[in-house]
Length: 156
Image 1 (cartoon, rainbow, N blue to C red):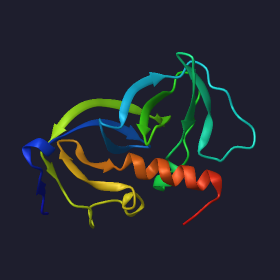
Image 2: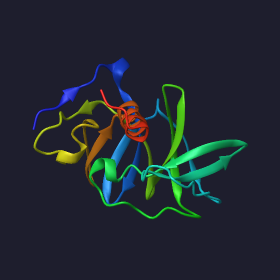
Image 3: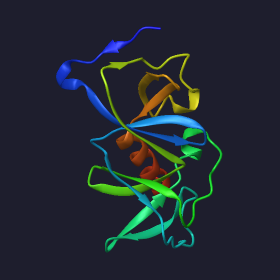
Image 4: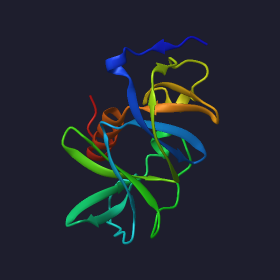
């Protein structure tokens, strides 16, 4: 398995989390915080990936389930669930997650290939090798754009 060594200025700091048993990572440039959802309001007639909205310090925040987008079974999100707040292109949302594992720095990225889950390929940037297995580094802007386009019904 070949790896790409990132230049020292390009060493990435990532937030690691689990989603449906999968080990995933997100560049901290896109991660804002992890929140525990106390109240979640369902919104009628919304796309399936929009679980609802929550009030985060006076701001209404969409709560998304990206599992189906990644080819995983939808999860249950409700009171007490954790969510990772991400922001890209001035669009801020919270993505429901199962478990937060913390932050780490990476210097090597394994290119996507046979080792990656096929479903993640479109949204994955590469793989991180860890003691507990491979983590897929996700492309947050691409995921948010796919959800936005899917919600509006517009395609390229």
